[in-house]
Length: 155
Ligand SMILES: [Zn+2]
Image 1 (cartoon, rainbow, N blue to C red):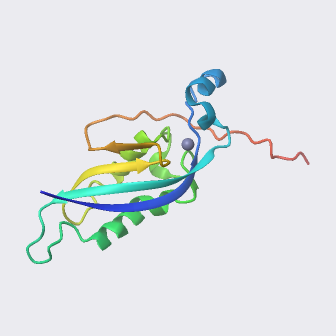
Image 2 (cartoon, rainbow, N blue to C red; image 1 turned 135 degrees about the vertical axis):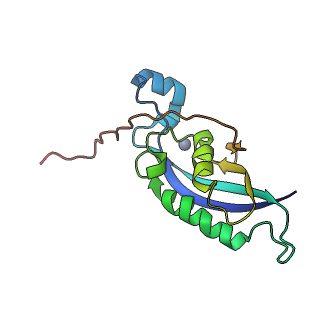
Image 3 (cartoon, rainbow, N blue to C red; image 1 turned 60 degrees about the horizontal axis):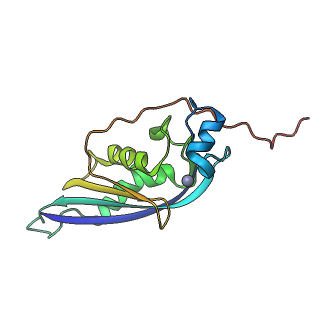
């Protein structure tokens, strides 16, 4: 078996909080990541596909086609977006790197032109990353209500 990896990057905002928690509990659990109006990351993701090289092309998967699928199903939908509110396939999900791995897996799983999805890694920073190999996992969804801003100026 050969493992082929394509890397992609995107920038996005998110806020880590659980709307069923009190403000105090969100603060205690998520700390700085609970900033009501969110904060940003330059994310990097790595998608690894496994398979045997096609005898005619030598490819497990054509990396140019993998890039196109990745852009279409994930990158174009999350780049320069607020992950809590702007992305249809993340709606209601607490956007930790763990949950992003799983959500991205579900976006990609059945879209590969060849090979089989093996692993998705998402880096939120140079220090923090998660990886997912497709084991069954259920992710609860919550009613994420955008924070009211203090930027609204009364008429
Ligand atoms: Zn963050």
